[in-house]
Amino acid sequence: MAKELIVIALGGNAFIQKDQKPTIENQWTNTYAAASQIVEMVARGYRVVVTHGNGPQVGNVLEWMEALKERIPPLTMDVATAMTQGWLGYMLQQAIGNELERRGYPRKVVAIINQVEVSPDDPAFREPTKYIGPYYTDERVVQRLIHEKGWAMKRDPRGGWRRVVPSPDPISNVEIDVVRKLVEEGFIVIASGGGGVPVVRENGGLRGIEAVIDKDLAGEKLATSIGADRLIILTDVEGVYLDYDKPSRRLLRRLTLSEAEDLYFNKKAFPPGSMGPKVLACIRFLRNGGRIAAIGHLYRAIDVLEGKSGTTITI
Ligand code: ADP
Ligand code: MG
View 1: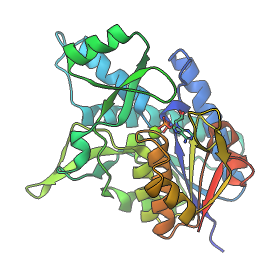
View 2: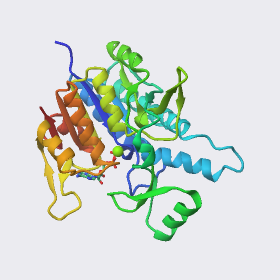
View 3: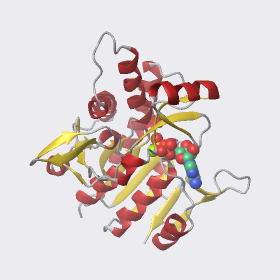
């Protein structure tokens, strides 16, 4: 029997957490924590494709560009996402490679630069929802950023204010054939990083645009297009909660597809820009032929895979 194929989606917060100093040492430590769990999945007989977020990192890149704009002409948001694919893809590729080698497996892991097509008419361009960059707590600073830089700012459910940018719905992964080929050849592929570089089709070609695609929705497209059995979304909370911001909050351990759809579409139980797209990604994955979808904590990846932790959604 062919080995089960799983797509693991790592939060951008997997590399650097809210209250951590964003030093490169901390980023490596976090990357190795993720890498060792991924290699443990390989050891347990799974084939793995990895995707990752880039919210904190792409926000940093945009800030560097802004701060240095008098000296170095700023680049664009699509290029900033490609930079984070290189940055985080490299770190994951090296850490997973080292873990593979340490445990006696062939070093077959590769990160690819990936474009994802979106529609230029996506309504998301009118209402930004995707959180990027640092957290701001001083309301005066927030007001100044809104007025001076023209940023859209929103409260992050973690606390504090963050910049939000348009997050159009992914249509298709442009390099999917390469991903499929590499998976067939036995590689762990790191793909669709940061949700992929958003591109639109025009005049018979592709062009990058100013947006950041949600990595979970892009991860679903990736998972569905390679015929993955499971989609596992790892983040910084135990799973999907009902009434997340109320004292009555409750962790949902198991959901059927129709229960998830009722909560998402009818009850509108999950906010955009964070838990909403994760639940929607799971719904779409199961609707598109996936077997199991799960959302759980990064530090409990193996337990989430085994259904012992997190929220598991099935048909
Ligand atoms: P990631 O980088 O992993 O994609 P996100 O910020 O997009 O992280 O999503 C995870 C965050 O979603 C959590 O840190 C939490 O603050 C927020 N969240 C909002 N609603 C819920 C909910 N109903 N259950 C769990 N987490 C929620
Ligand atoms: Mg997210």
